[in-house]
Length: 144
Image (cartoon, rainbow, N blue to C red):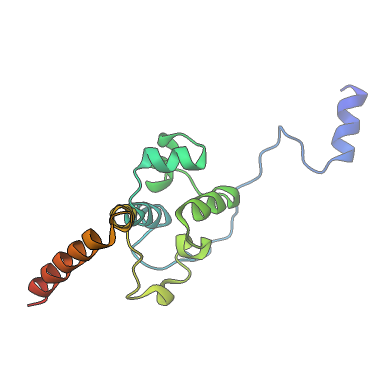
């Protein structure tokens, strides 16, 4: 063995060629429930109105990776969790399923609805009023 390799092994605790061992601990799952992190990520993405391609572009990755995260083929590391949370404008806790009781009954409008609202907001006030009256009438019919 050369002196450079033996010196590196002595000075560094881990070598790039040595893989970490799988834990032998038999712990119960941390998150109870039917929705996995991947499914939750897909649901949040859809609620926000993004396609996998759009989300991937905004994060700076390829669509196949978004698909793999959503199907739980890949585990989210801390950096990717932060990137998804920032892009989707939600907390990392929400993606991990740690704040479910805080969001009961609260639903953010989807990106599709927000885009339409922005278009309505750009109309002249008289046309805005007509739009809102039509929407109100439709909502009243729907409530009955």
